[in-house]
Length: 188
Length: 175
Image 1 (cartoon, rainbow over the protein chains, first blue to last red):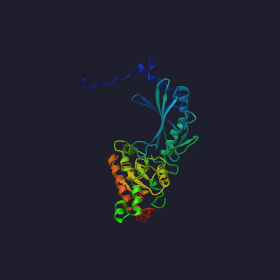
Image 2 (spheres, each protein chain N blue to C red; image 1 turned 60 degrees about the horizontal axis):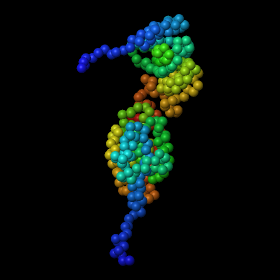
Image 3 (cartoon, each protein chain N blue to C red; image 1 turned 90 degrees about the vertical axis):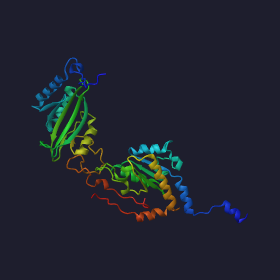
Image 4 (tube, each protein chain N blue to C red; image 1 turned 90 degrees about the horizontal axis):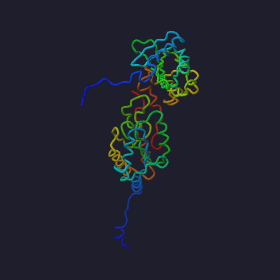
């Protein structure tokens, strides 16, 4: 038996898309975005394309991608706090992971936003599934989603006031976990 | 009937001891299982380890029917009010076993949302170390609790009031 390590077998683009390679399809989408919204920085990492847009245009970009380019599925919305991260000038990086289920494409849209009052327009009107995703980003990072139908905390208790995944929030909290009444014997 | 015959047929004891003896051999656990310790708790109830041998096999999911709360797993901020409410809903006399490292101290989860030991907020009778504890350890805790009930139990629960006065305050604030 041959036990040598072989390079991993991957399907080529032409196998996935007999007519059109994945990269050209994404390239066309990126070019269409650039035609509509100016020169957007884009990069590729291991076959996944990432486009950085400004926070004001994020809704229009996502709407265009959904309506015209077949990105009908919102995989996830998440956020990164770049406080004290070397070589960055913005505080928060919002990440929208999109997928097109018909053409089998994926695209990452990023937007950088800053304090005070980081806010972007909600995309619940485009994808219903964005509802809880945006609530989670609000809960953990305190980013306002304007136009969200029900922007409440989703993981932390309602009386919680901090945003725990921000880098300036201590891991062990600010004593919230011990802010409860103490029940003793004979009192309950 | 002669007095000598009576000695063979009658047992005299204290009423407190009799009541405690009844209580200790019929503990009804309330499984408050929030994490992997809950799986071990199920193993304790199952046939292999069989907590029925110690008279406490009737797991009830209504706190109104229980007198032993077994907290198995970590308790987070959002869960603690639920835990306290369930504890208050249990009728007296009642006892509590804190099962595993997380319930007793927070375990490895020293984070903003995990309560660092349920004994900060509700009274605990027995602590079971382990992550998760072996079923034998939990059975040992039940046996020890039975011993404790027999030793200091009273009919009207006087020991609970004594314990509440003696309860030392733990540091509730962060250092």
